[in-house]
Length: 133
Length: 69
Image (cartoon, rainbow over all chains, first blue to last red; front, side, top):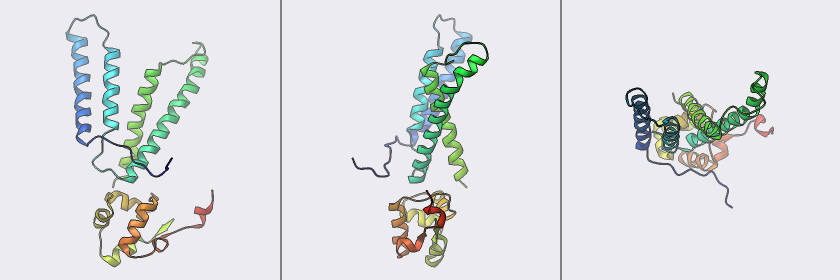
C-alpha cells in the first residue's frame, strides 16, 4: 500500500449550492407539511434522512478554494467531530443514569451519525474561517 | 519550523498571490505557511524551493522544538 498525502475525490463546487438549496427546500417543505397539510405520515425520519443526504453532499463538495491545507483541515475537523461523537456515547449513559433515567444511550445511531456530520461541518467552518484572512 | 518564504518572495518581487498561483495553492495557504501556522507537505516545500531556486533546507529550517516528539 502506498501511503502519501492523498486527496479525497470531491464533487464540483456547485454541489455546495445544490446542498444548501436542498436544505432550504426540505426545511420549508417540512414546515408546510406539518402545519398546513393534514397527512398521517411522520415526516421526521424522512426529513432526517434528507438532511443527512444534504449534509453529505455539502461535505463532499469542493469549497471555493481547495488545496492541501484545506484537505488537512478536513482531516482534522473529521477527527475532532468523531472524537466528540465517541465521547458523547461514553458520557451520555452516565448523564442519563445521574438523572435517574437508567444507564442507557439517549439517542439512536442515526442521531449519532447526524451529530458527527453536523459537528464536522461546524468545526471545519471554524477552522476554515480562522485560517482565512 | 522557520521559513524564508517572505525573504524569497521579496527577492523575486512576488506577492503571496503570485507564489500561490505558481505552486498551485491558495493565497491563504501561503500566508499560513509564512506565519508558521501550517507546515507544508514535502511536495509543496520542494515546489516553493524550486521557485526560489534554492535548496529546500535553505527555505525551510528545523527548530529545536521540531526534534521533540
